[in-house]
Image (cartoon, rainbow, N blue to C red; front, side):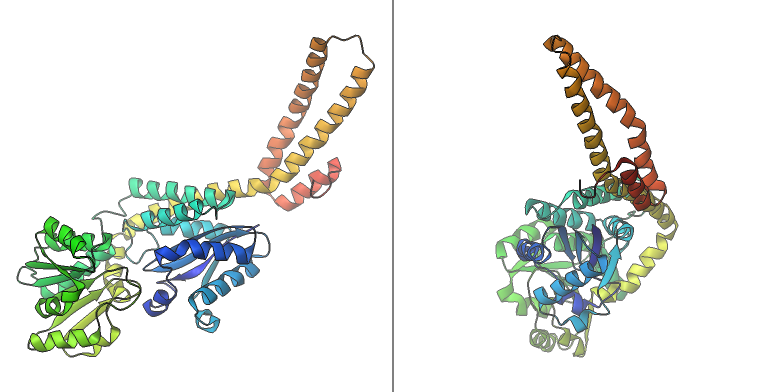
Length: 424
């Protein structure tokens, strides 16, 4: 079996490509079904966030072939030519796959190191795949171990000190431009978890006025009530843009929500007073063409990298301890994974010796017809104890050997010594 992860992240591709490869939440179940149909028997999980689209798969065969299958699936599902993916899609195998997932779940691979949303996103991705019966024994163990490692990193280090997230970085960027937010009007587009986090950070920074826009006015109103803001529907977005000094957008819409023409109209009504816009959605909410307008300063997720790098520098001292925990968890998982290689040989050896036991026991009992049923049971129990005692040390040693040495050579030697056939 090959354990592989293939995909793109903010390390390997820009936001334009990532948004083309993002899986909409409502499409994940269908994508999992299509992927398993393409691969046949396999365990798979799709992790798709604003900064990554990754497919984890456990499948029989060569890992290079599996990587090509996953890259092909990304291309076909999202209708993106494979030539455009060649330099962007990464691949990790076996141990590297585990280490990568553990770093992702622990927020060590995030744009903002230490952010606390990614663990929930990875957990949701796994739950979806599990509910769709798309996982297998190895994938289940891999993700369960990832959650365990991530919790250790979070509880035993200060990597998450300050509760830093993409939304807080966006607000910090706004503060770095305006210094004092108390006199500014902020328009937040969207009413999901990211929008709520953004609002909390804005309130903490003392923002003056808040407008919340959403496709559902009721959802916008509920969030506005919590943060003492004003709620509007997307139908009133033009009027809201006219009043906004800062626009932060994070919806789950499949396409552009704020057109460049709408921004241009707002600028005219504002007498060209500058607008600062941050798009933290994937796919992007704000038309990239808006950045070409005078007095518009548009930032997307990739533009937050400088702020994220500063955040990472502040947590640099914690990284070594975090990576130690990840490495320890990776080694534990890989020891378990290697032990699976021994299972067929252990089962075959146990079956072979038990077959000998049953055969010899039958011959002996046939020569002793005078034994009572109770005595026969005692003799059978005795033979089982003998076999179990004989097997105990060899089986333990086989499990140890596959961890420390060439497990293929060890297992082949055992099978030759005991005359075990392949596939039994």
